[in-house]
Image 1: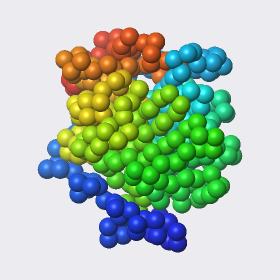
Image 2: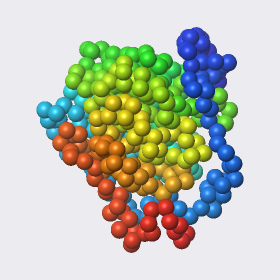
Image 3: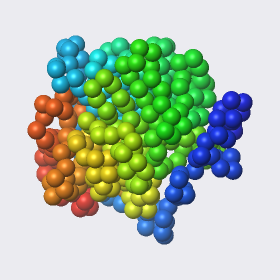
Image 4: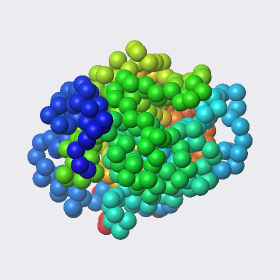
Length: 358
């Protein structure tokens, strides 16, 4: 992506996160592997952990549920895979990080391929009030999905600098709102407000990109609800600031997958997701960014299994809905470990984390 120009360059230069032509994390953390990369490369090339499911994942169609109004709880959520969620809150609908394509990749013939069908297509979505796009990585910004959404003329709220990418994909610039951290935008009518909040990550869609666009976590505010969406992030003390300024939250959607100690500063993983959840003030945790693409070295279901093991002693309320199931958090008592049935269906796969043949 060419360096920002014009008004985008002016806004970037005005950002406290922009230094020497690129955005930076407050902590100074930069992308890259920590420690000796050889074990990581060896595991990537030769490892035999069960990084993809050995049986089809259960997927439900949300169409019948979407046709019914949300109950008096006022909040209904549908996890469509990875970090893509349909949020229905107090009469408004928001779609997060829309990835409906077959691969999280710049090309259609290679790259991480999804484990499961998308529970609903873009054409089957109910009318949207806005799309929230946390940052520009391929597993969050899907070209084909954005082109489809551009034809629907839905407002897109995103991080500073990402608008240039959206315009190249056919989105009307008048429908794009780019925010720096702590900036907010309220949609006409006042029923829906977005606030960009700090995250510890990076950006780019090619090796030539140098963090010319910003990455953010997000607070979504409706009439009676405050929701937190992590995007991609490592653990940062700034989450305590988010809670103090904008909390408490009815639901926190935090990434738990694609984690490894070698890049543990820029992704949460289950352990740090629970720490972030506590910093954000607790409430209800919905784990995302797992169960759809093979983007790391762990077993495909390890993030969810680890999260449940740690959440009990921590006293954290965690919900793990089946893919595509439209649910109201107020009506659920706890997690649904649906991934264990996949292991049983696969014929008693070896215990979590053990090597498999082939």
